Image (cartoon, rainbow, N blue to C red; front, side):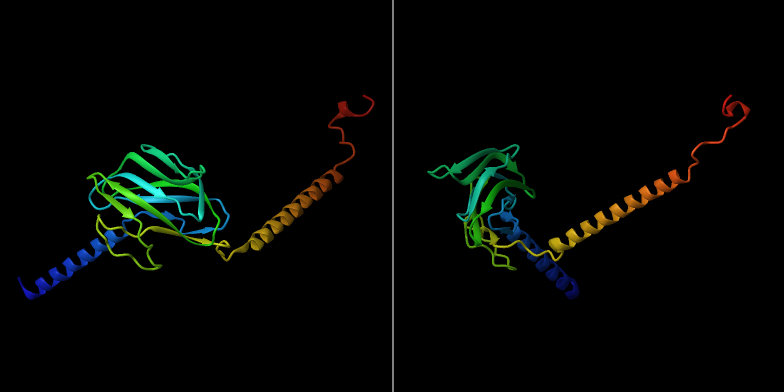
Length: 221
């Protein structure tokens, strides 16, 4: 093989391995939104992609102590088992009986309210069709960094949700929306007033009595 062809093949192989490794590193259970607001009811989505080329048939999630989960959505095709603390509060959930095929993912949702500022860690387990269990219980990924692939027998990074005391500033602000609504109302009132004035002018210019159309319509006939 010519030197240039060998070099291209080497670079192409290295790039393919890098892309495969990156895709594998990202294929872990995640929870969104990444940021939740303190004491604000939130729908959390637990996204479960397949781990490698083996289907997933069980998902188990332990709720973080900083979030009070009070409802779990139905997952069609799966059996939902809610795990409770001794006092009856929800501590986790397990879904079984369904299948997530290779190269696919499934979303599961719960409702919860954060009550403590900080980082909440959502530990989970992913049961595979070959009988192995992939644990996602290690330290969460650092912001902007991807954890290396750990293999099926070593725990991978757990999902994390940051709990903030205040909602994110979107830049628009509620004041702008209120001002726009006020001006819309003023313009609507002005247009309505003009319409009423126009109607009044039409009626004011209308003759008190229409002239007769012919001899038969003259008064006294």
